[in-house]
Image (tube, rainbow, N blue to C red; front, top):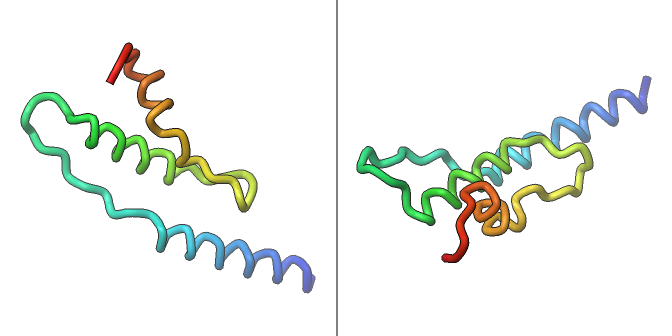
Length: 76
């Protein structure tokens, strides 16, 4: 029982800390196409929202590579 409570407390602390580190969502301007910066920011937010299976796993890395593969961009 003690271990279960300790695990729950550790998990709650991790979730609270993760929430503090996430940036606030921004509104997207209604003017046509999104800039590269806006696309990267949205991808960053999307990756931050994914809950990692491992406590120390960082999903919000290599964002430029992920964006290039999603957008099928040949060059920047």
